[in-house]
Length: 211
Image (cartoon, rainbow, N blue to C red):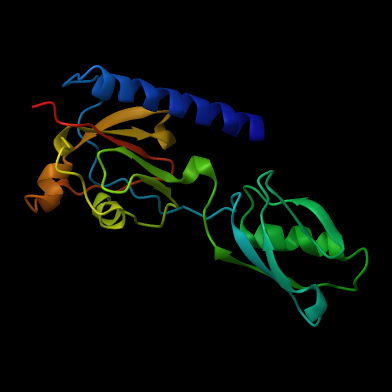
């Protein structure tokens, strides 16, 4: 599974890199895309899964000495009393709770565990990444029903040098398929029809205007 996710991530980043070259280094005004991004593309079946860098609160009922906040290590595993090197990456909080119960059952009678995500970063493959002429380029966790307008609020909009209407969206959920976005129309002209749904793993590349 990790190998499959890794290959998918490499393909997606490769597509994004090609778009960066075409839009940025080459100063190119056009790039082959599938046209405007669909306005409605929500992910109603989205379920948050744990990523590296997350902090999870593990609560073991009637065992306060085993209840604590635990970080997910860069290798995607966590360690707590009586449980060592347990895989957490890609697990839902409920799935991780059941895994911890199985490990604790070797030492504790009928453990009942609840896992709460306290600090959410999410897997890299599901983060929304915004590159180029955003005011604050960054990677952020995907949130249910997130839209382009929500993302613009988080990153503080675009710079004065941005060519927002030539933004390219690389959609990881569709094997790196590319779409165009009209960010200038949305944030500078208030055209709400330019607002679109985002999906886990989307990469946005905002080019610089060359004139």
